Image 1: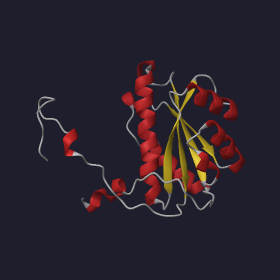
Image 2: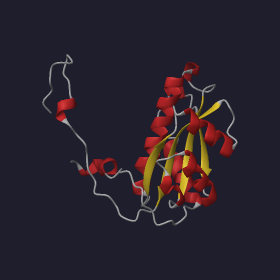
Image 3: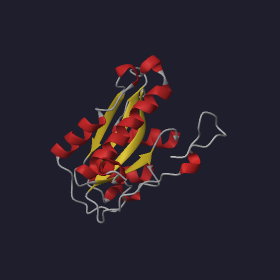
Image 4: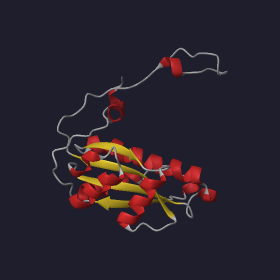
Length: 178
């Protein structure tokens, strides 16, 4: 594994946090990273909800069953998409753009000494509706995912999940040796 790619290997899902709250500068850096991603036709359909209040994160945990650690993290960012801004009004393009933004947040987190975890929202209607109601999110805005962020209790060991059996050559049934 090349050292130049360490920032990728260090991106690991973290679910145990110290509880130290994120400051506004850290949020800004994470959001700048999020908005640095490519977007279909540069439409940038993303919107972000910054959730620094612990009581709001506790309420989020009731909506996101796999996010019970939200009350212990240092903050969260809800990544949403605006279908009206997406290229061709396409749900697929909007989801791709927002997913890239989520990934950049999660790649930036370890560089800032943070851990993070991606909590899926879309396409679960009950999760979308719950977050819309809790945060007053307009109907034309779709919550795509949540990044739980904070200072990790333990830093996971960097790793890759490279699997050569998933590679295909010029034809699906032709393997590639790399």
